[in-house]
Image (cartoon, rainbow, N blue to C red; front, side, top):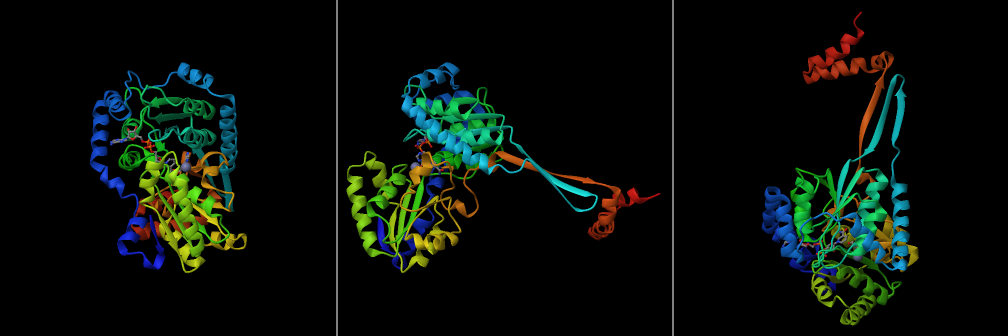
Length: 428
Ligand SMILES: NC(=O)c1ccc[n+]([C@@H]2O[C@H](COP(=O)([O-])OP(=O)(O)OC[C@H]3O[C@@H](n4cnc5c(N)ncnc54)[C@H](O)[C@@H]3O)[C@@H](O)[C@H]2O)c1
Ligand SMILES: N[C@H](CO)Cc1c[nH]c[nH+]1
Ligand SMILES: [Zn+2]
């Protein structure tokens, strides 16, 4: 773990932190081969990859309704209650994001302009399942798709070695209203949803997070299906001052570090005292962590950085563009910090707003851009499942208001029939 003043970072240390995600290109040729094989050999290739990567011997890919019912029956009722509580919060937050279905304005008399928003028809949700199970990601992808009105939502998730899917993942599929679930993960699942196979229908858009294999594959299939954005290994950047509790801060760093060896966690603080205390806590807490191996690998990509002042913390955070940004400062300065945030996937404010709250149950979406892609993408929301078209209704009186402008501009562009299409309407 790097621990130093921001001003003392070497060029290569700074590059390593800012250009994380370069692991994506390392998997390029492996993923290209998988995409090509699935495009050529469909289900057969996918079944073979399930054996190779997930150690699962499958004869079919689709989860049956009986498997879903059996899975739900096997679950503890409290666990199901908690899943439903999370689902309800996520449903309400995403319903609040929905835009007006249709609207009109009439600024010029006789020219009525509007916009209608409609859902996509078929969407594929990738739900990770390699180093952990992600029933929560079903709620974060399939549920907003259904809230937006998508008619067919399919889910792909890696099978476990015994050929089953985690029962809570299947319960989440049922609660979210997913229409079909397929036992496939990694680049092969993305290929299946993009190209379509005998079992898996091709979709209009693929959403959902995954490891570097999944993320690279999503970026390669965009001629076939749109994607949400690159949502790779988890990241957190914490801006904190002496107001932050070192134990909580360290716990929040380990929480994202345990996702993936490629995860990145950063504390930026003007307080040397806090930096030292958090480092000590990280060492102590990681000692007993159950996913110690992943955490240790991920901490190698991570850093505790000391800034001259709060402004330097904010500037570094904006340059880094974290998936999750926690602001754990004196409440008096929280808004000053927030108002200057330019690049962040989701912002968590205060000592009692740790990322895991949003990962599971507060209601916001946990599928967020990583590797600095927050510069140009927003986290998953209902708009990702919608498209819109504009509408115009124009009377003769309305057209006459813009007639001269259209004719003049069209002729200047050298598009004379455009001008004629207007003139003809005013000939006797
Ligand atoms: N950014 C976000 O919004 C967000 C949200 C949740 C999770 N995540 C991230 O999702 C990721 C989940 O990763 P995961 O690995 O647990 O599950 P995963 O489902 O993404 O990946 C597992 C699959 O990877 C493929 N794979 C593994 N090794 C391979 C190899 N050598 N060659 C080809 N394919 C291979 C296999 O097909 C396997 O089924 C983590 O990085 C986590 O941080 C991100
Ligand atoms: N922190 C992850 C997004 O980077 C989401 C998640 C799911 N489950 C637990 N955490
Ligand atoms: Zn998480």
